[in-house]
Length: 274
DNA sequence: CTGGATGCCTGGGAGC
DNA sequence: TGCTCCCAGGCATCCA
Image (cartoon, rainbow, N blue to C red):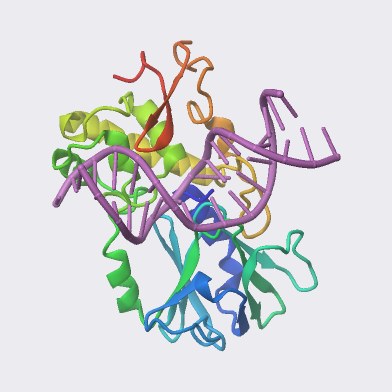
């Protein structure tokens, strides 16, 4: 599910956690949580006893910052879900829940991830978070055209592969890569270092616009994505190319082509994207 | 170094 | 119904 707009929507839908104390934390699968020291995570690593100060996001990663400075990073992978349940309410799906946190107002946070491609990482400090996030490129929602131009100039890969590379820019996944390339009129198979600076500028604006609109629509729900409040997103209604291979281009009516690029299904218009 | 292929998981849908 | 096959929003790791 979770590309930048979905993770940002989850972050916003967790706002009620801020200022609350986590009174207990349980981890049901040790292999879903990695600690800095490599040992098995204890409740304290999962912020038990801590007060939540802030919820941060970089790319597709979410960080829960405690007042003590301790940090819990959540990566949702393909099927990860965080749900914040009000006191007394029950989660409808209880299988594949790997961790549960109890808050001092009686609400509970659950982490569910059927495919287990996601996970939790415990960090000792904000400095450790900065260190971890230094491996990510600039956040795609706020990146500058120069960021993309520099990354593109030094890369011989196809431009779509670059957009999916979290070390080049953070937050774009398969859906929004295709949508942004379409919006910018750039063919996904172009070699990155042959995309002109003015095209990089257009592409950057397209990425930021596509992501911002998707955040406004609270993300894309293709199958099972919901925010922490259980609400589905609406951004899938705006998709121009993703999932529309074989259908008509919304611009020109040409049949959209579906190919495999960077090991991912890629849909584009041969006429609108050059 | 770079970038392409593979593997990790479960579940839903298509086709038989 | 039930079986098999294919595919999926991500990414780490292994090779050439």
